[in-house]
View 1 (cartoon, rainbow, N blue to C red):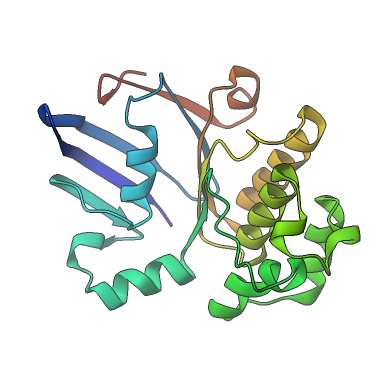
View 2: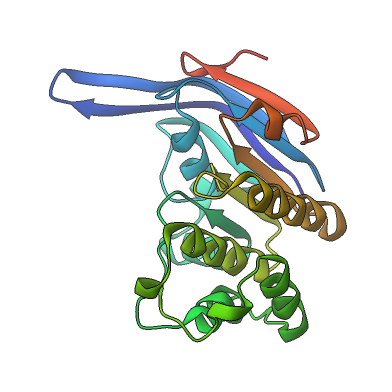
Length: 219
């Protein structure tokens, strides 16, 4: 399984006119590999994750996952790709308010037909969520909601994990534990992990670090 982004260009229209965010990005993330994507704010890191996750379309270039070009997908196929092949951890938690922690944790895994109660119990324990399983999102702190969102993603064992500052709302010890989980899953399940972070300390723990600057990969 390989994620390949080739000559990715993406612009957005603003009141001042069109602004090109990505200016020809090339990036490959391979089987079981973890890659840290770093760079200054506004450099296009989150935009790149959205394109890789099938949440948006590039203006030019190709996004290929396991030999399949995302631009060839119908909207139905794109939705299935997001449901079964990609795990998204973004800064917005997007938990379902009407479901408790346990149900939120299992939601995506059930949609992907990969629900494994034993694996969910392991995630619950390692994320420190056991005391909160019957609570609803509004009853949780921001850090607790972030842990639930991460657990929900990992519960489905996705082939591709896209994470945007996943430890930003967590203390250092919990953040390290979360990263341990992500790296363990990537290695053991052959998942690819592309993680946006501003932390050099966390980036150094991944297999490889790339820097996005001025809309291009510079190293």
